[in-house]
Image (cartoon, rainbow, N blue to C red):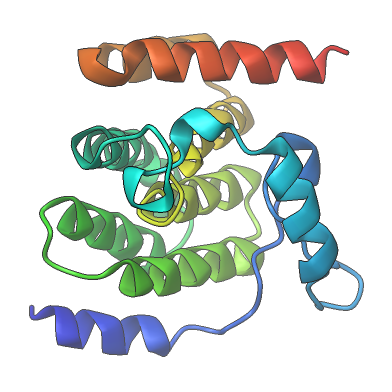
Length: 203
C-alpha cells in the first residue's frame, strides 16, 4: 500500500477534535457540544508540556534519533493493546494509525499525515462502546501523535493501563512489559516524566 492511499484512507475518517483528559496534560474538547476549546487548550498545554520532549528543530533538547525511538516505542506499546480493541471493533483506524507512526519513524511520510492519523484514531475511540476498546484507540492516537510532539509517547502508557484494567487484566503487568521495550537511550527521560506525572496527580 502506498502512503498516498494511506493518507486517502485517513481523510475518510471523521474530522472532529480528539476528546482527551485535560488532567493528564492532553488537549480537551467540549464533550457536550463537540467543539474544541483550542485557545484555552493551547495555553494550558504550553504550561504543562515537558520541555525535555521538545524536538531539536523546535529549539528543544530532543534529538531526531531520540524522537524516533520514542515514536517506535509508543507504537510498540499501542500495538500490544490492539487485540483488546479488535475483539470488539472492526474499525481499522487504530491499527492504521500505528502503521503510520512506524512509517514516520522510518522517514517515509510527513508529520501532517501522522497528525491526521491521530485524529482518525481518536474518532474511532469516540465511536467505540467498550471501555477497553476506547482506551486502546486513544493509545493508538497518542502513539502516532508522537511524531508531532514527543510527549504523546506517554499516552500509550496512560491509556494502556486503562485498557488492560477495563479488560480485567493487570495494569502493572502491562507497564512492566512496556518498560522491557523502552530503549535505553530514552529510558531515563520517560521514567522521570511518568514519575513527574504521578507526583502531580497526587497533589
